[in-house]
Amino acid sequence: MGHIALDPDHPTGTVQAVLDAQGVASYTFPDNVAWDFLTPDKADLALAGQVDALCFGTLAQRAPASRQTLRALLHAAPNALKIYDINLRQNFFDSGLIRASLGLADILKLNDDELVILTDMFCLPKDEHSALDQLVRRYDLKLAALTRGGKGSLLLAPGATSDLPGQSAATVVDTIGAGDAFAAAMTLAYLDGDSLDEINRYASQVAGVVCGRPGAMPEMPETLRR
Image (tube, helix red, strand yellow):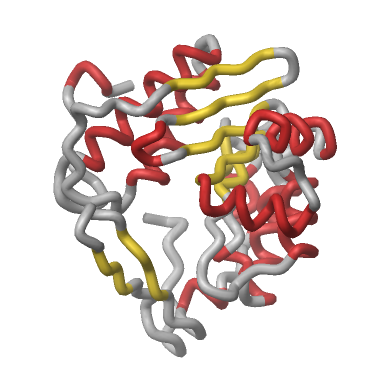
């Protein structure tokens, strides 16, 4: 609790999630909320220096204050694995912000809609494998992870690839939290030293549980807990 800040001047951040007929969510994020004005203190920076992994996105950098805070935390964590869950929402991104974030990352995680945006923005190849390979090479990444909804997930590291097809038998209740769950499970498995296929399977299984139950944070089965 010591690292939770209170902001008396701005409302708590909220998001409106709307589900389509297939349970796929779209989101609207009001701006000028508390997390747009994050400021670090010495205790926060000290904690950043102790973590094994630090996950960040693009949306969290839409306001100058929080963008500067995030950069300070990243620089205070030189030994942490840095995961860039790209998280492109509404109009809260541009090519300069994405390039700068990729330059700070060890791992990139994105979905197929976000890859389309990056392909057009950075003139990447239309082929998924080639596009991810170019991003890994261009930004010296340890891993790039592409989630494709019902079409499975593709992980690409220097010299290695894991392409996992979708599970047709899976029932989707809603997709809220599935991307975050995939990123979290992928990070745990990577830190545990799993193979690329093992990382892909574990992250997909955890995300599948989230998709199969209502809400963003369902209880995980014992077999998937780490």
